[in-house]
Image 1 (cartoon, one colour):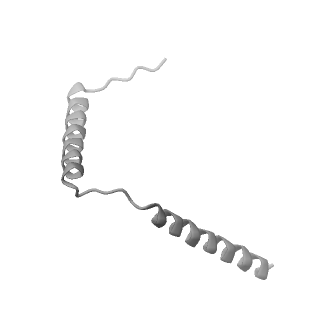
Image 2 (cartoon, rainbow, N blue to C red):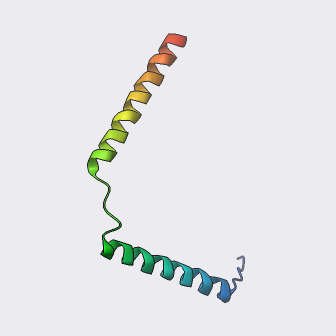
Length: 64
């Protein structure tokens, strides 16, 4: 079994940084500065990816 030694000060520093980030994010959400990305954006991304896939497949068929 391998033993892993960690510095508690490093872990505490990381936890404090994460806490500060979450507090800032919470403040932005409460102020209305952060909003949900509309589903239509994800639908459009999926459509573009699908078109790219179809184009790649057609290109591969042409090259054969």
